[in-house]
Length: 92
Image 1 (cartoon, one colour):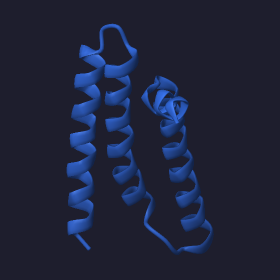
Image 2: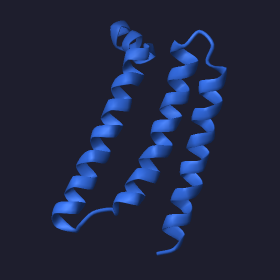
Image 3: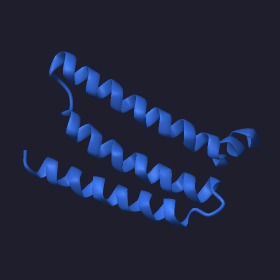
């Protein structure tokens, strides 16, 4: 059990989470383009972009020696994606 907690605390977990978010976006966009069903691509990009930006901010704090600039840019990006997503879904 302690090895699981060590993995969850490691930067490698955050890297795998970033890859998983990108794969999820690719699958959802491909599914929508093939079937016309599911969330719209811009909605997927803004929603998962906010999450990805937040994970990048966590990674910056956890793995980088001087995370200040990356952290600020990533959190600001997460906020911008989040507001953009809210604007998109409010137009429906």
